[in-house]
Each structure stands twice: as C-alpha cells, then as structure tokens.
Length: 176
Image (cartoon, rainbow, N blue to C red; front, side, top):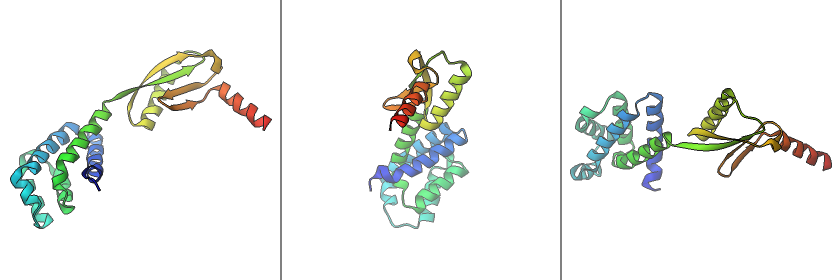
C-alpha cells in the first residue's frame, strides 16, 4: 500500500473536522509545522525506532507543544498508535489538495425553456453542490425545444428533467 493511500483517511478526517469546526487555517498551520518536525533528520531516525507509541506521542507532542491544541494532540496520539507520524508530510499534502478543492468552483450548464428565477437557481446550486461536493456556478441557457423542466450538464454528466425527454421515454414505452 502506498503512502498516499495510507495517509488519505487521516487527511480526509482532519479536513472534514476542520471544515465542520471552521478551523481550516489552524489545521493547515498545525500540519505544516508537524510535517516539518516529522521530516527532520533526527526525528525521522527516532520515529523509525521501536519506542512505545504512547511515549512517541508524548515526545512528539512536546516538540510541537506551541502549535497544537487538544484536538490535534488526539490526532497525534492516533497517528503515533498506528506508527504513522512519518506520514505527516503526505497528510499535509492531501489536506492542502482537499482545501484547494473546497475553494474550487465549477460551472454547470443549465438549459431551460424559460429563464429561471433566483429561487430555482439557488435550489439547483444547492443540489449540485451537495452532489458534487464542490462550489457551483450556473451558466443558464434557453432552449425552447425542451418544452419545460431543465437539463443540467457538467462534463459528461447529464441530468435530463425536461418534458421533451419524458415524452420521448413515454413514446418509447408505448412503442415497445
């Protein structure tokens, strides 16, 4: 198993916690400092030793004491129990990638027979952000051939809620 694969659940858990508690900046700073400590030559040698995980956690926490709170102490203890403190640079890298994705905005095309009102746009944005786990902007276009409803496109994904599509499916059902 690669380092990235092993580090992924740690990075995801910390990122989700940071988002939920509005503390992304704190966790980014803490992980940056902790990753630098864990990558130090002497610390790397010490981490590769066979010291008991509780003692390893205590020493590592004391090295980082000015940069960690109770939640991050628990995180360090879990990493130490699983002999994963050497993965902190990879956890930081993945945390940063998740943070970049959080701020990434994608554009979704929405086709409708008539212009959408603001409430309709907000509902579409909410549903698509929930589904894609990304921030969304809409590029709304009018297509009278769909009769009513909407067609939503993002890359190769299409959600066709148009009346013309429903009529087409009903026609195929009747002909089959």
